[in-house]
Length: 153
Image (cartoon, helix red, strand yellow):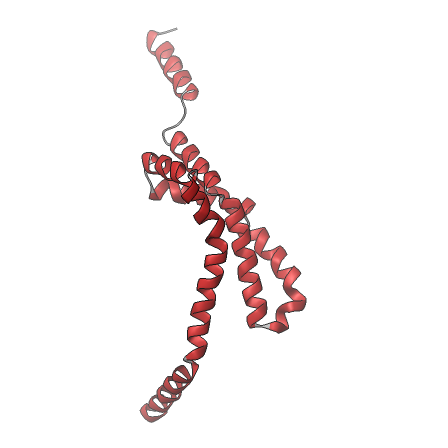
């Protein structure tokens, strides 16, 4: 056997034994997602969206279980966790992910995580209420635009 063949085999073996570049970065992204309770937040957020949709469209109530099964199949934690980890890996350096992980493990970090679903729901309700309060303006703008379109034809 030639020395270059042996060197190639050894180099290949070393590459296989070493983690690929980014493996620790992705691992840290997973750790950060775990620290922030991403599984709970993701699944609770889906529940909030479902509840808001059924509240906004009561005729969807009989289909809530069907919608839930579909949403959780394609947007639930088990479906999206690898994509989320890759997203955070891309957006943050490994050091930043470690800092975020540290933050989420603090008392304040845990508080924001605990309150996030409620705050998100209330924020969505604020937006919904503001839109409802000003629906007359939207209707007026639509009528005006319809009139403009009719006049241009």
